Length: 146
Image 1 (cartoon, rainbow, N blue to C red):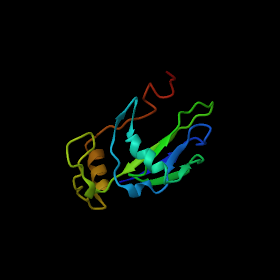
Image 2: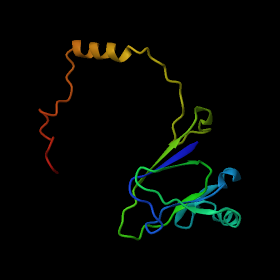
Image 3: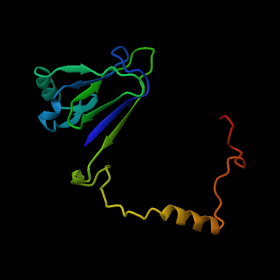
Image 4: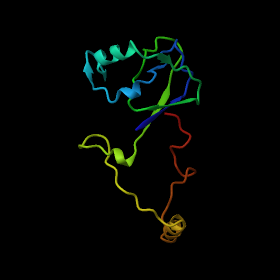
């Protein structure tokens, strides 16, 4: 599994940017759980790792992306500044890393590959059957502010 952290706003130390322990992915999986009021990696293991690994503040601009291993220890500080710090975190998993038990994560199943003309044929069938599609001109909610 790998993650892509994409900045929407500038991420700086002042607004609590992402921090990573460089090389911590080589430690393997560190147990996560509820510790005090937070959910995260075992604080005792993190503290030990911090004695030997460099803490890197990931200061990035909108559109910049940090790709990192799923075992990389990472965190961010609370944003107490006046500037927002929105980002997207997208996680990618190989089919060979299927969950071993039922959880909120999906199980991976093969997808049947269709021929290149499948969309064109399906579209022709829909139009021939008289299927109606959404028309923004006829939608009374378009353009209205809530």
